[in-house]
Amino acid sequence: MIPQSEAELPGQGPDGDPPEDLHLWKLPRGRHGLPRELVARSQRERLLAGVVRVTAEKGYQASSVADILKEAGVGRETFYKHFKDKEDCFVAANDALVANLEAHVNETYEQPGSWPERVRRGLAETLNWFAANPAVARVMMIEMGTVGPIASARFRETFSRFTTLLDDGREFIEDAPDMPNLANIAGGAVFARVYEEVALGNIANLPALLPQLTFELLLPYIGEEAALEERDATAQELAREGDAE
Amino acid sequence: MNQELEPLSEAGVLTPSIPWDIGARTQRDRILKAMAKSCAKKSFAATTIADIVSHASISRATFYKHFSNKRECFNATVDSFLAELRGSAENALPDGDESVESAIREVIATLLGRLAAKPDHAKLLLVEAPIVDPKLVQHYRRITLAALEARLRAAEVEARAGADPEIAFGRAKVLVADYVAAGKAKELPSLLPELVYIAQLPYLGQELALEQAQLVR
Image 1: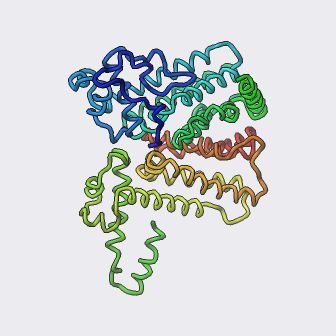
Image 2: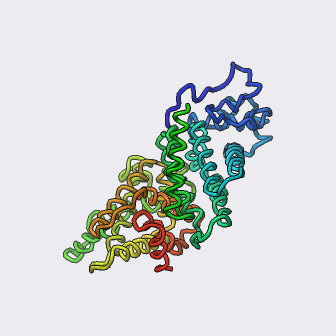
Image 3: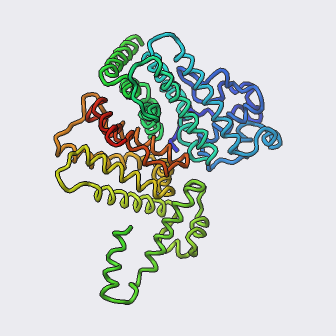
């Protein structure tokens, strides 16, 4: 476990008084925040938030259903009404987080602009979302791999859905190489790098990787020269944003 | 692993008796194999000493004669498979003055073949090891890139401006691990053209890397 500060993992509300609105799942907040849609309104959502908090704190293998119940302030019977077991609950929580990240990415990707520009925005959104939610990033990227075959299959599906966005780009560009795994090759650069930064606890560093990762993501599709131009434009924009802040 | 056993067979020629530690070595190999099998089936985290003992058909006491815990056994399994991969990569390198491009094609083809032949070990290395210790990935990357770059430097090839060979390693790892995790380890050899492209991209650039991929289609 990468140690998390108190500020990042605020824990449970007042004793015996389950937070009425787990304001953003009581998960780490930042610029992009954890998703309004995920505000816990139901017992199910409290359990989803609970499993994420417990996993972020103790790791998936070391957490028990009892830990989740305590964290969520929900009874055992209710838990089993919603979920088959710990794994089921964890996978459902991950699905909710992925859906939220995807909604953010899709929204920015669908705004008008050139295809490389839209890809760059989608990537920026992804890096910022993870950076704003370090404990969540760890749960989704690292813990998810320790759960079991169902979670691992889900993880691969998620990665493949993200990279499929890239293959949509084939209609906007000419001469993309004819390779069955081109989207995986492009997206793999981002995935490998993000995974490593998250694993090593350098999550706050992710947004700074935008120029290089924009280059690597676009390179297989638009070639070196055009990808370098996108990289430099991205770096300039980041510098401008930095100055503005 | 074969290399490890070589001195034993030589000893066997001189002294017809079975070397004293052959049982121990076989046991150790069986334990390593059992570790890979159990990790492939249920992940390292969920693997218990009892699983290893049962897959290897040895006693718990025998396990502890070789390893003091599960993690130590895991590390030994990874190391032994890495040594095996390195050995086959070195054997695949042509001795003559073939081009560095053809050497890279040969090595990638050989590694894919080895991984395809041992799906449990492939999963151990590519899927489990990074979870057990994320620093291991940097470790393999250092070894792999050092070997690749030594070869390329000898041929006076350098990474292109803006290109990052570490990213190429990451792309290859993600693609191969994706196949292995999906249970498609046997299909790994079909990735040869794409992996040649990935490996060459930082050094030759898009067009020439695509040409290299075309050569192995």
